[in-house]
Amino acid sequence: MTPIILIPARLAASRLPGKPLADIGGVPMIVRVMRCAQAADIGPVAVAAGDPAIVQAITQAGGRAVLTDPDLPSGSDRILAALAQLDPAGRHDAVINLQGDMPFVAPDVIAACADLLAAEASCDIATCIAPEASAGDRTNPDVVKAVMSLAEDATRGRALYFTRGAQYGDGPIWRHIGLYGYRREALARFTAAPPSPLERREKLEQLRALELGLTIWASVIASAPLSVDTPADLANARAHARISEPPSA
Image (cartoon, rainbow, N blue to C red; front, top):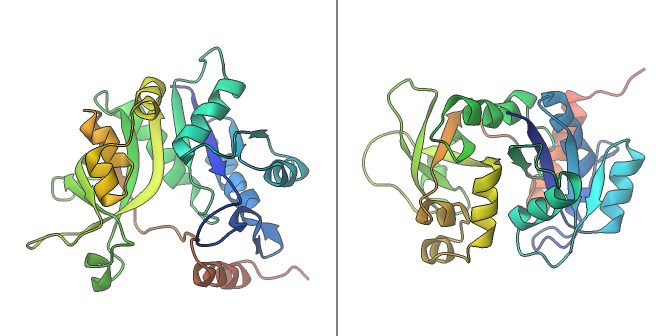
């Protein structure tokens, strides 16, 4: 496969406006995400930006960004628009959609999506899951849970459903990580469809894919990457940068 990594980003986030350009240890968050994607070394990387200021930040950092319509309804629509600009000939048959709010995501987590698409012929969309971080995850609607067909000790399996609700009975709870790898035709089919009933109910767009009959597989990773959605998350990210990246002498 010949994947491309696209990172959708816009300034008008509802819970933390301007977050792609938020300073984390002297580096804009979106630049950190771009560098993580580049370190994965699986294909070219570009930011699908909804605002000129994001394009400027990425360009100044030596990266590549394309400006997309700021009114596009979702990150998936944004990466499809960027793909049309960057690869109109269709050379890239796989698209990794990396969220722009994971400033410390490990490169091997990004690569896991591309590896899963290559390994599983029935996989239309690849993603990642991690074990629950605490008992509170089970009832927290902000923690999206993946309902998996996963054998014991397996490292990947098919996702049957995603929910914000609590799951009944004993067994592991898998946190869904908002990172996707699409076969190109699956991305086109997904974005062409309107929001589905389950998607609207749970406010989870991956349910649209399942209702369309697309198959989603997930790779198990050790823990969920730090993501930034709120001011408290941003404070945590800044603290993490101070601890993990001491200033040079």
